[in-house]
Image (cartoon, rainbow, N blue to C red):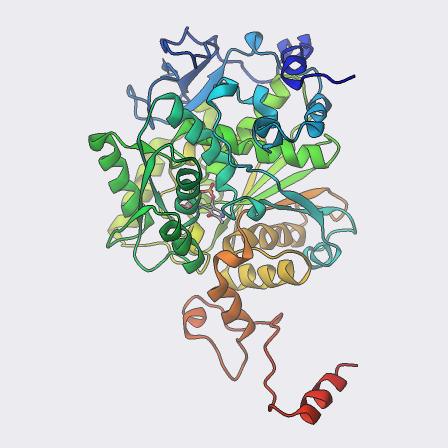
Length: 502
Ligand code: F0G
């Protein structure tokens, strides 16, 4: 019998078990004041800080709490949402891939991010990503065969995980009628926002980038997709601060991860990981940490799935900083800052930042995507670490580039920042925090072609020809280099060279 999935979705069986909750459920949202046809009245925006807890309608364009300046969540009155009784019910949508919102690897889970009615959704086919077993990367990390999985978010349309979030931000932008969207970026956010604008024509885009730190693949995308690209003479943190100010004064729709709707879409990475693992939670999720949007979104996804009774346990989360951009590591692992039930020690955080400024310490890593001083989602990430019994580690650029070479040799490849997850998993194995039989998922956030310069430089590095930029970042060797071979344009010599590999 042919059935319409939209109708079946509406009929997803409800489940009472989510009333037995381990985590406190936020009080029901007030009715939204939005008065257009796109109203969903069981969603609101809510401040995450325990002493504030202010809530606002989803028709408002906010990137921080107007009352206390804190971060906002999109929050739902789950009692009124038709959530499936089991995650496997989402499998119904696999057979309806001609419907764009069922094809989308984000919106096929729309009951778990129910802030937009179907007709408002903006999708470009994001989220067709793969969970791969790589025996050689498993061996490199020190895992038993079949226990390490690589989640390739670089397979998204713009080549990074950002599309998971941008589809949600673009949807909200459409709901509020935005005509001009903006972001600051180390490269991937801008590429993602720009492709949503070029393919949908819903809004124009302006992107702010820092000086000299954006990988060429990413810059080429923003230019090619027609985004107005403004280079600030400063770093990413400077660019983000400025775009926040400009967005406020010029009424631009801001698409950085301080936009709570963007992070709703990023929860979908977790749903797809679970889908690939037959809905069984792994033991560990390992993710690079930059502005901490992904880790925050993952924590929220797990918190909600557990609240809804859709999973029975929450995996542990490992967030991996680059050594040269290690604010989270310093604050959590060195200074003991925690979520503290929604009251993190802000004085300690402020003190850390004023010392950083006084000593003029600036982030520096070859993993340019995560070269960030002040991660804007810090407090949300603290909550994620709390929910997921998480840990934070830092890895050197040498460890990152070696891990990246292993991902390339044993899979589809990734950009440097992404490989921090594999390097971090390896470190946690060495420490014995992760055991060889655990099931571990490393999130590979960006495509290998984003930063070909880093890849070619690594494979061209040898004792005889060290790379100057690498040396400045402590990368002194390339044990997994696959250097190009040079041979005379002579048939016999070429044959001899090939023969030497037989
Ligand atoms: N990996 C890649 C490839 C990224 O582009 C980013 C962030 C991260 C990891 C860190 O993710 O911020 O969620 O912790 N890139 C942002 C950008 C900052 O502007 O493209 P996060």
